[in-house]
Length: 101
Image 1 (cartoon, rainbow, N blue to C red):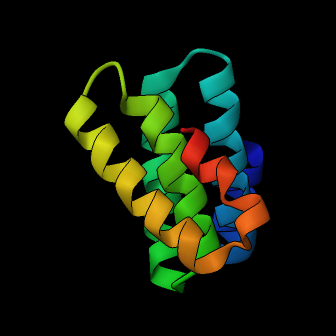
Image 2: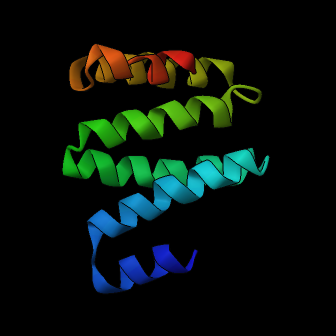
């Protein structure tokens, strides 16, 4: 949380986005899907504002995991967009990461 706060304080969007995606992933692995979803949605908004397609795909992929139990239709939408972006932005050898969710 401190990394996110610091990045916001100094206006470092790159640092903010990286910290949000990392924190969201950590919350997922800790089993805190609701917290992960909140943080990942914030990161997704930053990634979209920067048109950072790789990180949009990353946020979407993690959002699939964060929402699948609670809201399957939303998880499906996130997954479909993530896969489409992965196909556009990643070499075929890396696309399996998006496809695995």
